[in-house]
Length: 224
Image (spheres, rainbow, N blue to C red):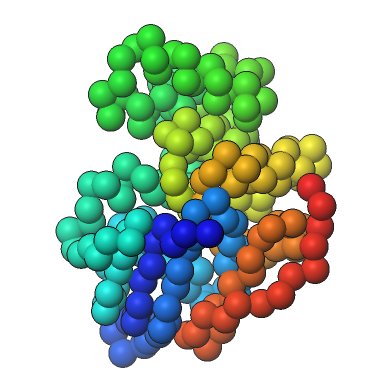
């Protein structure tokens, strides 16, 4: 598999505290990664750095094999990388408008937005939420809307912060299968998670943040 995003000598510090010092991080195309580690180890911060939401000291970075500068964050990466927060923000418009928000910001015409949003609603199985006030949705419902909002943009790299933390039962299993669908379609996923079923999902590479270092781990496989 080809490298999609590579970063070398990646360091993050808060005051006198060094959160992590990573020699190399390579994200390949059509690949899934489970980022694990203790609370406070820097998982969410690392995702935000990859998404351009947090600054860090980086010796070298490459996107699609071309060397890039991350400050300011390149537009080509803004278009290709989508971050989904553990507690997604909903706008007080409608569920459909929330899903189509990114498309509208990118200048898509109304007809295309409606078509793509309809596909995303079907993909995430949330048609029953369309008449609901987005601000009154449960945590799990907001997470599913946020995943549809991210998926509709067809990201090359989807960054998920604890995607199943607010879910249980069938909704949780559905999100696990959606992640498999994304990689099957050629996208890449990196998720910060404690969910053992996600970590052990077939084809998922486990990356553990421990003592400021990033370590690759072998997984026991769970078939979705």
